[in-house]
Length: 367
Image (cartoon, rainbow, N blue to C red; front, side, top):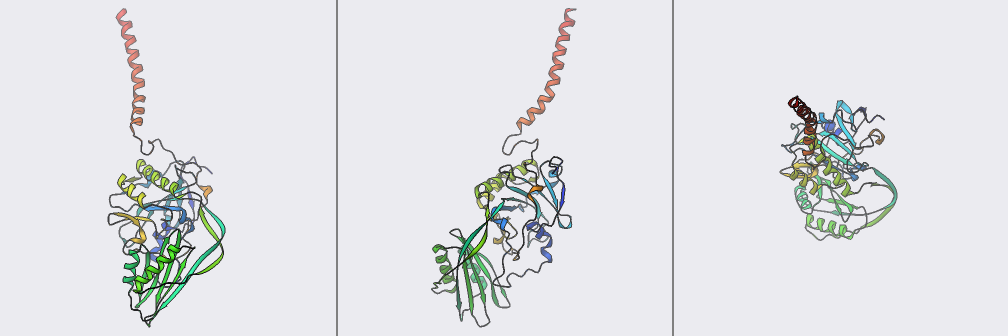
């Protein structure tokens, strides 16, 4: 591995939020076509934070990263490139700098995205989940009502109206467990809801019942049944707070380097208020929308992908073990020491010349 000669190309299939920027228009994306379809999820997203800097005032210059020691330039489909390096905060964390699109902003071009990613360890555990279901007849309810009530409860909503029938799901993390409600309506005004809670949590059970009770305007109390089995559980090696520190540092470092311009301290503070592990990948990356930094799935008209297999495919050994360094000043420090260094280079020969002139002057005066 030659990490001292600057970036080199690694031709590789990369299926991630970056790749989706290119191929998304070729996919047939139906908002909801099955109550059991999975959202775009990659296990590494659980240990990652990703932000797309689509604020109008922000510009970028990725060419600055070319030729820098410690950075790998990765080429994937159709000549698109991304830059990978080790974080200055924690060398276990990989930083991915790429260009991404946002939809429905189809004509807006590409924006720079920054992702910090922890290694993932898989542990074999006995996974226990709790399921419940309900079927309600003679219910006339529209998906906008469901969307509005669920959003008020803080649930993510991926639901739509297909030919007059409701199809979709609602999801939220409650008390550190994931809860998902799959909903579908039939032609005879029958609405079915299947609920999965990935762990025991009375708080989650109660909120599901409260949400459904408000949606259907009647008292609903589901009976949750326990289901168990062995599962391989992804566990990030780097904690959430450390990942947040890495994201904040790398955003400032890229700004000081000149890769990012127009990103002020206020923007970074607002991003950090939102940032947390799991806010990564196409559906959940942080974006700028209506003056706020928010997960992509919260914006109006977000094109949410509901496919599997959206993970990066790159070997860690191809990324230099040390973070990149530059002659620039560290993040948050003044550039004044650099200026003084340049003055010292000039002052030394000038000082020598003055001393020589002084000696010559004294000698001439004595002659």
